[in-house]
Image 1 (cartoon, helix red, strand yellow):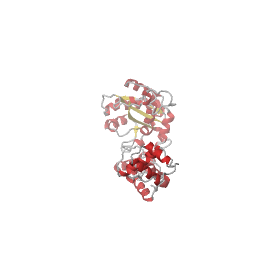
Image 2 (cartoon, one colour):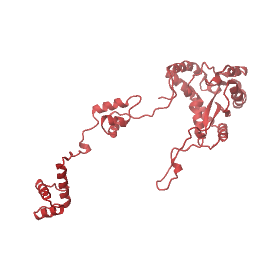
Image 3 (cartoon, helix red, strand yellow):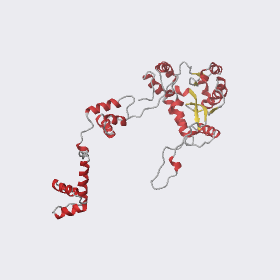
Length: 356
């Protein structure tokens, strides 16, 4: 570190500058008087003096971080706790700006002082208090249909939408070593705002999956359409194929869609002596308690994401092939968790199953 210039030397430099000496001449004059001062130092002294004359003062020397007062005071820690320990926590940027500290300090107070860890919220369907009460009351009756062996006699069905975007899915990432030139298309993951889609109806049971039935996009799904195009085929074709001689013991289960609960639909089940779970027992607005919703549909779309389809006709063909060879172990695992899910809902008095 260079030695600090003395006040005497600095004064001499200023005096010579005021007499009109140039910086090189000042340096030479000082050298002849026994003062060794570089031209750069002379320039610096003169510039600082000029700033001082113009009213500029040198700011106080900034202290290194280890000498600064800590931002993690108890008062700040309490304020941070109030800002984050709630349903919708404030962002770290907002807290840092409010307390006038760094984002890093806010993070330190959250993790070290408060010992908190971030957890991602789970997306769930909305439930009103009335719906929770209905789920709880009906669930106490519905659980009697379930059990390790009872569930084997239940055939459950539902409809779901599948779009072309569910096939040909781009991955979220790509690999590179940093040296090779990457094609621009690798860096993009595009989605269509209004992808073409199709509604399909499928049913599952302990012994496998039904065929995939396509709902005509231009047709209104009335009770009669549902009976003619889906229900009757499941009753007379799929269930006998899956159950054989035990088909008469099957209990049919549907959700609360209007075409499912219509009088015409219920009468059709009665006319063909099909056992079914009454709509008064099934829990409405309960995708977390429906095997196709909480298990099969998501896995079906994961499988489809690796298949190729560019038009609706091709999409339908792919869906049917996937359903024909669907993993029975996956179906049985999904059905085996059904009773436990309903019990969890009952333990929570109608609340969500997925929240831990």
